[in-house]
Length: 356
Image 1 (tube, rainbow, N blue to C red):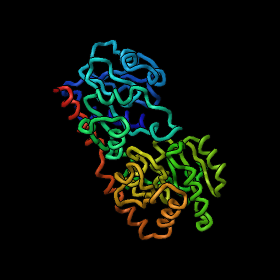
Image 2 (cartoon, rainbow, N blue to C red):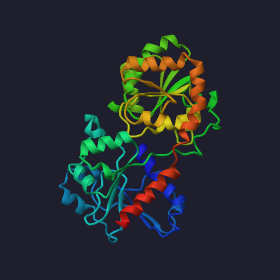
Image 3 (cartoon, helix red, strand yellow):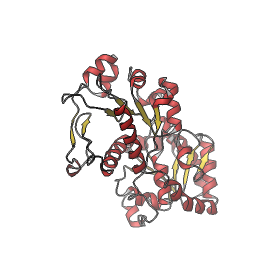
Image 4 (cartoon, one colour):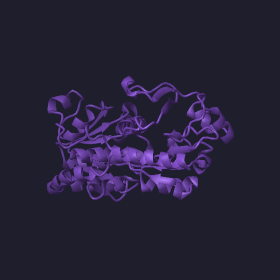
């Protein structure tokens, strides 16, 4: 999902920047086994090693007092010059300059998103730098963790430009049919928790479906939870496609009439960015960081309520000229975001922290 995808792309972008040739060395630790689909062996070049993390599970660490949590993750290969945790779950060992990437703080806003570590605020306040992908996320971190704003750096994410671009060929009807997807269709791609707002999307679709009898709503993501939500809503013509393979997703998305992204809380919003890069119109909500990502290149519902979503979706479906305009403007907007720029800024922050 999103965080693991971010981690892989950041590491790959750092390698591509030539950082290893400039004398940097990286020791990558995973929380348990290295994830399937992670870095390929050939990417673990000289200066870059990978290993399982020696310590406690995130849930166990989250419950420990701050000094104990820091001691639990003490590295056994000597103290590094800098410890960059790509999530708040693992604190830096004591005495090591710390950088954290914190995408957002859904556990602080939504009861079904788990809980923050008991030491989250202290870890952030003692860090030399915090990286976050949007101004919205920065405001959340400053407010909810009481962090000094000067140490929170907004570094927008990028997208895979070789994977998502306007020349991608959409999956044809036969290829869609093998995944149970009829055409034409609207696509939702993402999770199912309350902030993702899928139930409101299904209720909005129930309002719209009678006016668009040839159209289907497709939900891509965790099959069981999405099927449960669809069954509760009883909206017509809903297909739960499950997870789409990463090499198939761009072609399915390209074939969609639009991406509908009803989330009401995102620290960034990668699916809308990927859709814009393909030239696929986007309907989203004026909430979280998504407006920062899409600018004026999407139709934004005023709220995440079903009637507001239905109105925004109808605004797109009932106005072919606007849909065409979004197809043309989306790639240019997406082009403002790149992993190269993200990696360059991360390296600048590394240098600033290690030089301090």
